[in-house]
Image 1: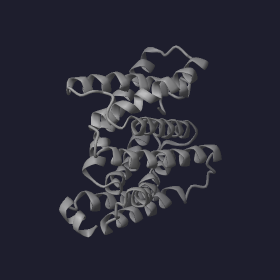
Image 2: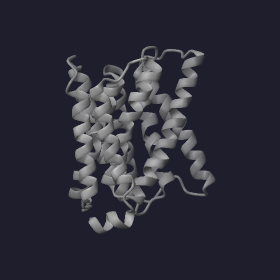
Image 3: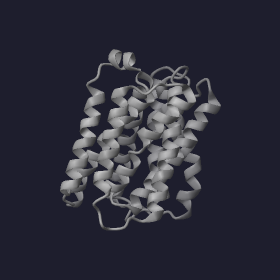
Image 4: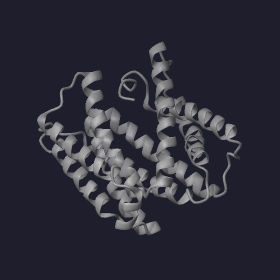
Length: 263
């Protein structure tokens, strides 16, 4: 997204991502011998709308903020997801997950706080909008997991996003260059893989545990920012990423049966 956004309108990027993933999702659903329409269709549509809102806000934030800042702000999501899962579907928060959340918040604070450059307030606002939409979407996925196959849940995301994005894409279409086509295709494939694994994770683990592992995005964003854009991480960034990784490992290495006992 960060590489494509200087040349392509955001609506075109979101639409391309949706159209690639809807084709891949439908093929995977049919290959598995499933009906693509599911059982709780209204809840599935709601998940698609929330996912579309979160995705759109996040992509806008990526176009207005540095990669590391946008990714870091997005990782407030596990905190809100844990609270919403406790409030809406009664999922308790284990001690290890609470500790991981605290590590993540501390790491986020270290990464953002030392920067003297003011961030775009619109970028911050839409990043927080992405957090709210994504958190509600993850809790919805967790609830849908009781009756729906993960591939069906994944399918509804681009199924809803494609028609919602089409007018936006047509309003400012720019013909992609060959490299842009590769970027858009890669974006669609990568996000499809990520959605499948995230949806399965939300069915296997509690919403708070599954999304807390997402703090790893911050560390990966630092690496990609260095490799692709040549931006060196500061000592504060490295320290913050270390805290985030530590919290993630705390959750990842705790066996599921022990987490359940703690909860």
